[in-house]
Length: 130
Image 1 (cartoon, helix red, strand yellow):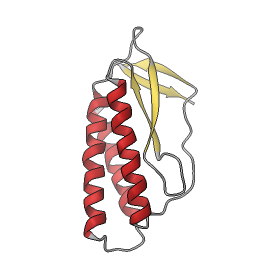
Image 2 (cartoon, rainbow, N blue to C red):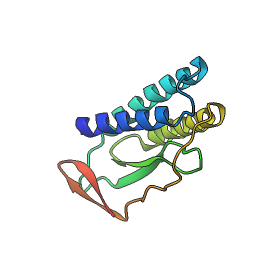
Image 3 (cartoon, rainbow, N blue to C red):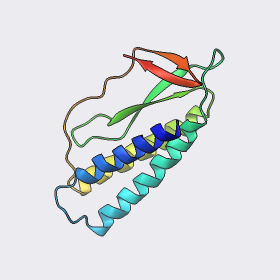
Image 4 (cartoon, rainbow, N blue to C red):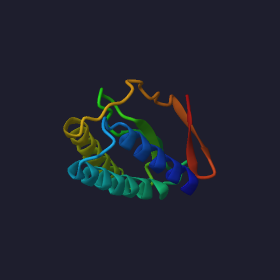
């Protein structure tokens, strides 16, 4: 899970940074990126404590805010964690990224990530089925 968390974090930072139109990111935009990065780590740390099994339900949540609408990705977790805290953190992250997009001239492709239709549980992790 740690390797996946690092990959997701690095990929989201790459997408966010590469979405700026200019090579020089204004300091206010850089501060917003730093805050987004910190919040994403907090989200991933909480999700990293999630375990699956018969007593917990696998779920997904849309994370990020693309400039043309919709989330960047879906992340998977179970009801073994504080789902209200997770939803609150993700809502804050999505709102902050939407603000970044609007004020820092972010762009993106307008593709839409595909949500899973079901899950399987392997090695205490929810594996999405598409």
